[in-house]
Amino acid sequence: MVRTDRLAIWILIVTFVLLIPGIRFLKLTDELACAALLTLACADTIANGRAARFRLLWYVIAIAFFYLLYTLAFCHFNTTGAVCGDFIIEMKPYIPFAVMLSLAPRPTVTELTVLKWSAVGNAAAATLCMLCGLTDAVLYHPLYGGAVIFISMLVYVYSCWALEPTGRGARRCLAVATVMILWGLACTRSKYYGEAVVALFFLWVYRPGMFRRINMRSVAIAAILILLVGAVSWSKFNFYFITGASAGLDRDTIQSFARPALYGTSLLILCHYIPFGSGLASFASYFSTQPYSSLYFRYGLDKIYGLSPMNHEFVCDAFYPSLAQTGIAGVGLFVWFWIYIASLLLRLLKTDPGRFRLPFAVGALVIVFIMIENVASTLFTQSSGLVAMCLLGIICGMAPEKAREKKPEPRIIR
Image (cartoon, rainbow, N blue to C red; front, side, top):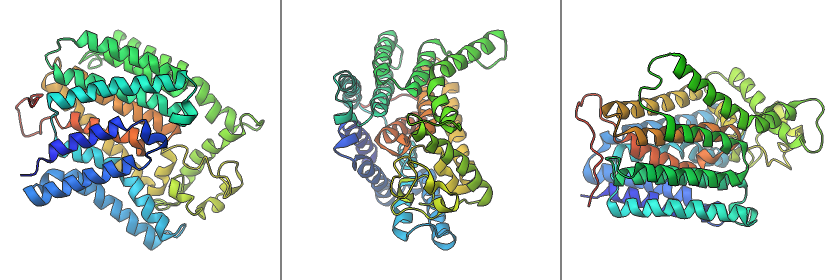
């Protein structure tokens, strides 16, 4: 029998270790890892006869193929090559989660130890790069430094918990995680500040059942959390979505007009192309500029700085606008996907709130990380997103099936 669960863990480990080199020097790391995970699923299906366990993966692939055929048949805004390229990119973030969820691998002590110390190494290396002026040379942008540190912190917390699921050493683990969060402040990104506030809340303050009843205490905690996140994130939100869209643009803010233009146009596309959108490689994705999509001319975006045919560096600047390619139906599927993940995390938490508080917190923080980053980046489709989705799949894989009453055991293979 092929031990695909062990191979899946090592694919995650290799991708995680190469997280920093993959930003500038090994750019195909995420594509190769995703292809390897998909190959594992196919191998498990063929060799072990387990097609049913990969049901979610087959749904993802079927939906992606539907949009591929829909685009080729009815939407002619780009070339066939660009459409096929975008087909792979748009499907890529969901495959790691679906495979890990289906395999439900349990890392061994050795694997957990490698993940734990790789997390510390990644966070330390990213911090040193930012503090020593090597951001452009190694990390390309401070955004990636913050993402590497945040993901490394989540991997560290999960690894510590899996090594000692009884909770022994939890405070030491959380203390180290807090230090890693503070290291990430060196990226100076407002989005990261918001993520850090939520992370500190989930790691130190949150307790299962805290928001089960609506009372003054729970409302006050939620209000304070929202205010803190808003306070630390306001400057960039204002720059990108308010100042950047104002009539009095200057040379320092003109590049920020591209993002509100993308968001505004994405709403128009959702209304004009009901229900399946404008098709793949047509809008706000990398392949919509390889070559340049004719849809941009239709909405006048070709005249905006950063979105023009000759200068389109801001086209692939946020994930959410690209959902317009899939229409209202695609947006609905995207929302359902995250509701499904949230239900798995809650199901896991209910089995044993005390034991699974930290895995639940890590899973919730992965969702927070992706939701915030998607506003103004496409990390969801890159190596950081792949590692995050793998980790989320492993955690959700511990949730029991509805038909089962047995509590999931955090098994460690020795």
